[in-house]
Length: 573
Image (tube, rainbow, N blue to C red):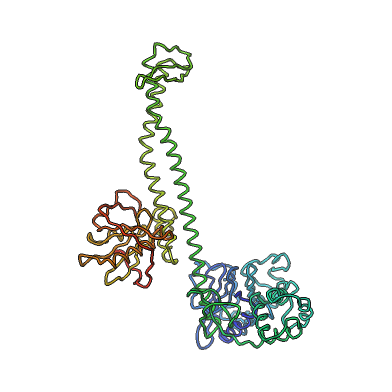
């Protein structure tokens, strides 16, 4: 559910218990959205996280503060100036909205003992952190010295005013009864939407949950006064039951209590801030994973487009170069018929004594017959040189296209951010991404592979082209090498210490190889296998490119076999 005022009400009660009376020992700003306060409450040190990222705004307790920049941002310096060694007096929700008010008393040793108030506005794209003194703005995380949303001034030295309510009312305001009477003809779905539109700080999901619970109690929403009493009782008396909602083991939502309108498996927590930390950490990882994946795909597609454009240009040159023999023939026939040509002729038709046909040859009227012949020979020689040069360039461009397509396949195989980081390193190695590593003495991270245990045999699977190279080079000549036939895929090595690999082990290895192949969504995949000694890497070939012979193949269905995965291991023994 969105972090609405009801969730913040429970959360602020917990945060106040943890941080009230605590001293702020450290303030960092890991990125433009996050601010982390390290607070000692007399018993234990906690970290208060404030995140105003528009997609995931929150205030919570965290165990991580992230890597801080070398130079602290201006707002971080402002907070340090006023709040270091200060005491947190109280954390409470501003009734009843998505704004948290933190009352702070600065340390007198800094000659600044005026109370400060930190307002944390958790309002989607309008989220902000604003520090005030005597009701006036000292500074903010973003959007300071401007009119927020074109309405309220957020200017240093001016009075702090709350964001506009858009005519919404606090749930306890009896004027809501009159508004609810206008919605007597609405169904439950419409009624929930309407309730969220008139009550401040209430999300649509929470509003629909309240309506659902009211109807389940056997009452009619047409009785606006009775529903108003129920609404107030629900908000003020419902006991929190912090939980995260999962579907097939994947975290989908977070709830302050059991929402009957939200389906899924539930994992319960002792505190809402703990549940939030689990939920947002998972969502942050997912966001980083998606962002990095999209970026790597964009980089590869851009380079693939360049290579295809280059290949098209080269093939045009090749097609033009294939006319070289025609120009050589014309030069030869002009010499053979030079006695028939006069300066100023624009063309001549001659017999082609090679095939018995006639051939019309265009002439430059400004040139002599001999010079026309030389012009055709000159064009022939140029086209011949182009043809000789363009062949290897076409082969190289085709190899590059195949290599980039393999990268795109490996990106699609990646299940987590760590796999994508390995692809990123490969892109840095080949120059698709600029590497910012300055030290030449810095050691390159050892490539790793996925390792499976199958019937006592170790099955190794590369996660990208660089790992495929190192994995193959580290394999013994008798180890079994597997690759999807006619598809980009991970290289798979089955260690062979016993002479003969059982069919079951081969089948599992082939199924894993099929899963990590570009053909896994098309049904069964043909997997080629052979001993490692039959696999060769041509000189100057791209990463992950090998040729093989004397192979056999097996047709299998893709299977990840995650239950057999042991983990990640170094590609070199």
